[in-house]
Length: 225
Image 1 (cartoon, rainbow, N blue to C red):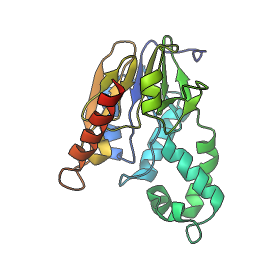
Image 2 (image 1 turned 180 degrees about the vertical axis):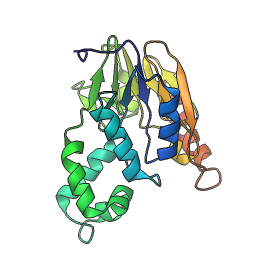
Image 3 (image 1 turned 180 degrees about the horizontal axis):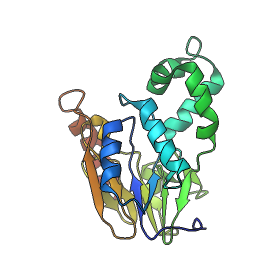
């Protein structure tokens, strides 16, 4: 069911991945009376994860935003359940854990565990990666099976998860991860109007990195079509 007291317009924001300056710049471009929907993966990869999480959570607490769970939030929670970095390789390799440390990650875990996986709009929905075509429940790591099987039952579905060079469509699915942490842009998409607004992402961390990820996404999307 749609969330109560919805504003007239929403902006679904792609994978932020700790890109604080990108998020600050994008929020400035969006109308203050519209609702923001973080499409998951606010955490990990970027250089300013803690401050990015605080900014996103502050927008949630003010009532302006909704933060959906992505696979990176879920992976962090799963690793925290396994143990500390000395005994858990998943934590040792997790950028969020390295930047925040054990105590702050534990403090965040209850909030992250409560994050919803879907935001229901009127005639559209947002979730991190898509829905399982067998159960039609949200799945945080799905790509091709959802892209190839989606039958339009939820209207337009806005997802992140797969970085590409621009906001693009596969049928009634809108992919809005434009690779901010790889040197692309951080994008916001308005499902009511189809408008896209963007802020610059990080400088590429290696030559051609964004192009590699964009090419992989394009190959997957061609298969889906």
